[in-house]
Length: 500
Image 1 (cartoon, rainbow, N blue to C red):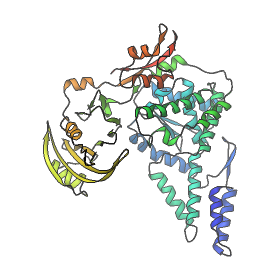
Image 2: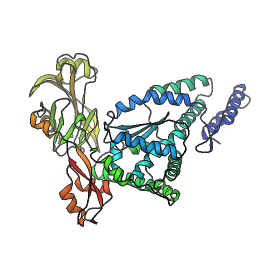
Image 3: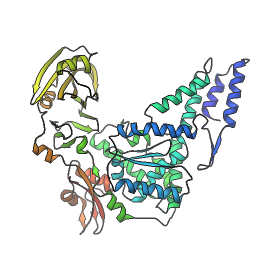
Image 4: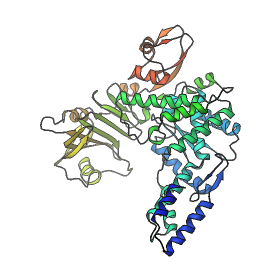
């Protein structure tokens, strides 16, 4: 029996007329389960029909695109992804469900689906794929979530839970209407259950087989996600990233093993040359339009400023925010004011608009290179990684133009021995307008495929062909080739190069 229904039954009191109404409602639910032609299972989707699913997808689409930094503009890659999706839909006979494929301009590794057939892949995920079959598995997996109506199932389970929680004196209609309204109007990227993920994997493998792709690519890609988690831990990035694939599709060992068991021999479409051609030159990491880290300098050509970030800070740059952390010592967050209306002078902006609800110890105006600015601070108790205690919270507002402010929040520890204002000051005084040399240095890393001309050890190849930070770690992640591993002549590998 459905757990939500079971919980409702436990709350029923004997000899209560209201209970008979509830029981009748439950029986209606049970007999309203419909058979999904794609999963061949009876599924409870009573509280969200297909028209409502489409409405949710239509409304949420632009929000998703904006949240993840816009659409990645490529005349080659977009049509290529769409063609793989169309091929899977046709070969696997997936009916009349239409799909819209979007590549998000984000270095974050993720893929997900919205109701109504909206499928999203980040360029970060695409660069992680090592074959067209792996890419096809990701696409097929997200298509499976749509066809299995996992979002509608989750929504219906949530509704039942809420009805159970408010069973006495609550209006069932109001619970359903309120929850659906929240779903439609708020940004919702589902974290599906383990059972949903395994079912989507299983369906995706069936679609791969029918489409002629290598079903073994499923376990290969899921293994890569586990390698990605290890890479992030090694580099020092936090695990609780709400936008990453680990928040929406946790890559467990049982998913890898299950996909291996489901995979069978197949005629296997390879399309290696087409895959290499379409992915060659895709941006890896920061896009200059969203700001880019070059050595220890953050350059933002669109906003016309640069800023030095000390090497002991771990930086995470997103489309709208940059965060940097010096472990147990300091934490920094930077963004730009979102309002397009005219802003007053920096002191007034900081005091009355940006932080009007904060009582600061001191607010003062200042000049930083060519910019007008204001800063203020206060002390409180806070946390930075493993450190918990007294911290200073400092705000810096820098006027970029009459309508935009660069906003910096800097939190540093104080424990009687350490009060770290030095990092803040060095960062603040480095903020300046870009010069011609800065603009010329704003070049992104890109993924390129190269063929090994002669037998070589990977550490030598990394030294000669990889650019940017974390060369060895990134090479290992992109190619599943360890440091100092022997690579034979003719092998195709991914490397990273700076190129406009």
